[in-house]
Image (cartoon, rainbow over all chains, first blue to last red; front, side, top):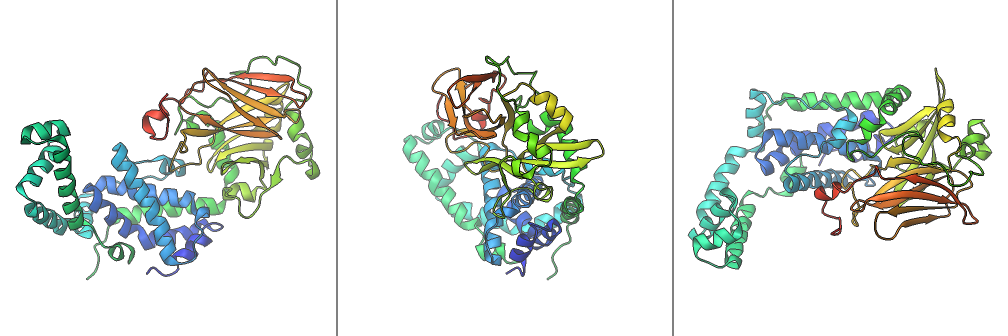
Length: 191
Length: 253
């Protein structure tokens, strides 16, 4: 558990410089968190910046007293950012822009290290294994819907099944993949 | 096992350290001026074509002569009569930005978790009055500038409160519209092109109207305690319906 993060977050209300300790405690974890979920290093970088920018602007709203509460608060912002990104296909940058944060570029070396940090190679293996474990029916439905981006009606016609069945197969396939790639909370919260 | 060194995290951390240090060193006046010099640009971050400063650009002529204009709301405070200050002093639980707190800001009005702050500061150009719409966006001017703007005005729309970073609109598809009112104003009504208006009574120096983003506002009307109409302000410029394309909380229009 990160030591003193909650107290630094509280202190940052009056002493903004204390926020740098919060950043130092969670920047790597959050970057990895986003890379594992977006498979996109640059999007993960932007989401990390957006999360810390929003946390900085809203630091007065943190009401917890423990590091676990601080982590929960920070990851709550992160999940919200991720949800918006998934829904809208773009990173919410308002807080970053308001603060005037210059988001750095991703160098080649950084790219490789971030992939290593996030364990993407391992994750890809796990996804591949999880896809291999799916039934043929589920794998076909998943490919048509997620990779080929076909509407459910077309998935159903192609596979000769009802639309309801197509939805069910895709849903079950995604749930199986989700179980395979989901990281444990401890792995994400513990530095 | 040592973790890989990632330069971009160092660089991003340096950026946050810089921003935090700037807040601590508190060159807030210059920062504030830079923001207020381009309020429309700053506010356009979330809501396009929303902000207009100064009365002449959108106010229509008062339908009745205002008994007291907006200057009356702030005149005593500006003359350093603290007993005549608008609103209330900040409390520890208020979510005011640190620079507002340090400049002795006050809360003019609060509603639904949104607060409209005012600060008074001394600069090389004289006393500066700023109305804070959210953490880093303020509308400011010198006293002389505000006096010109406030003259013969009963109400003035400042713009939207954009402190809802996670959700620009609330669960009913509304955003807070912040404004100032003369002491003679007791009620304001925001009328849309269609449908019922939003009515705020008990107005005391300012107002926060939870405004439907999916409906086109037409005008704001201010009334005194006797129900007399004091002023009408056109809101035809305030078209936020495109926000509903991006937010899921708007009811079907």
